[in-house]
Image (cartoon, rainbow, N blue to C red):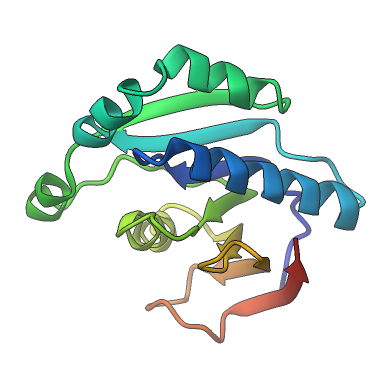
Length: 171
């Protein structure tokens, strides 16, 4: 049984190409404002390793980047994570999913969306179910596929047949 949960928090990888991340967050917000009767997200959680952080800080400070996103009406948390090699070696990715999270799978996100989805699946050990969204931006950024997913705790493996609503929109 699907629970109606509004999208509450945008979760994304933050890369050296930080303006791509900002543009995709803006596109997600615009989509929600035009297509949803519910509330728009109020938070953004951005994951960044120290290598990408250095690339970003060559162009803009993290404080300035946060201000750009905060002007969109979002409370921003930038979480520094270990490098992907360290994450894969240790098996720990510090994402704790919540109902209503929007996982931004924009091009250039690397393995982060897969790590986020693994965290969502792992959260089912403590939760009865979880409702989340996928925002899949096309490689050229011309369209976005928006999906709402509900995964019950009985779901043993990630399955595309999990309860889903899918809509492709041109941005």
